[in-house]
Length: 271
Image 1 (spheres, rainbow, N blue to C red):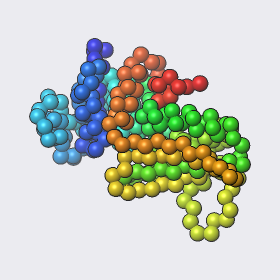
Image 2: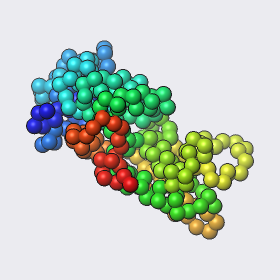
Image 3: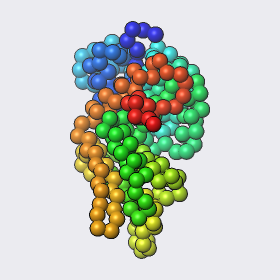
Image 4: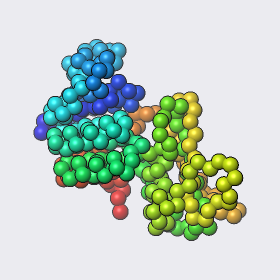
């Protein structure tokens, strides 16, 4: 391993990809070795710094992910489910730490990622921020303390370009609430109420997704019963906080054995 672990950022032309590149470049503990884009993209074969509107970095944009990963100790990936699953296999071949911030993954996708984690370190989280992960822990604790007479609703807001709903963070919070209750989320999840739905089911966990403007991310967990409510809330105003969390995960994973981890592991918040 080099003194400063080498990092590859996937999907470098995207908003989050460029944010990750800027954060790696500012880091004194990591070095950027390549950027990856899909085949046929206009950035492929060009200098990444120039593509981003700046000066040359001496870092190329490539569509050969395996070749790029082979030069790196970490891959940071906030792309799309199909791409992330393919990258997981390639990162495992390269024995690079794979930090996954991609959301909208299916059960089949998650299974494939779990298989890849037998051979390399994978850190996957619906949200990389310290605040959200603390909120996740608190949500689980509150849900454990309150019985099913307390309804649980999760409300999330994001920008109008987000393509999946509920958000990965909302699902993290739902999983935490379900774990606190000792139930499986898929058995109590309630989404997309519309029309004559009937009364709310006791013990269900509701999800609501708002989309508009340039909202970075807001999440509320509401515990409501007769006469009172508890509202837990996190507001993200700067997308860079997700990038900084991803870099922290890339560094944390350098001395870990193969397996699938999350940000609670990285932040030392696991029970």
